[in-house]
Image 1 (cartoon, rainbow, N blue to C red):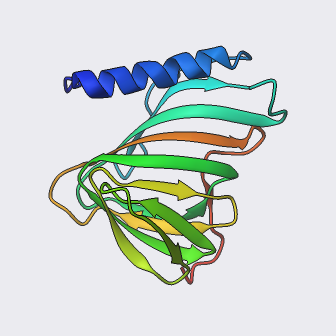
Image 2: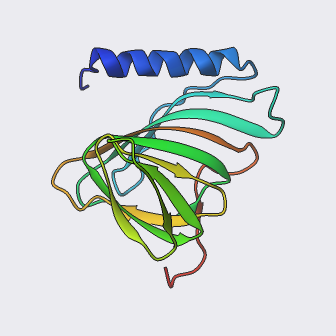
Length: 163
């Protein structure tokens, strides 16, 4: 298991404390690895009392080189920060906001393909559909937090094969 830097450990601890403070139920299931080798580890979850019907999660993703995330959306809001590597991200519908490592905030409309690099953060909204891939030679590592409809899956595959 890779060793976390003190800064990453502190950030994870702050997010874990914030999740715990929300009350509700908590779960930390084992990491999931689909056939593509992508790992999504649930680091904490809560059903916050001030957001009925919503689930607050903290995630850690590892996306191996060559992996493809098929077209999908999320049933709520998700903020992800690239901790390592570069993710090639295509906006299929809606728009996505990216905060670059230098602090610049940019909104990208449907039809745009962009690179999300180490230190960049992406804010995904429920009306935005996207796909992504790791075209690099090293794994992409993401930390993400989400506030999603508690009755739906984390990622909802797009039904259209045209994407």
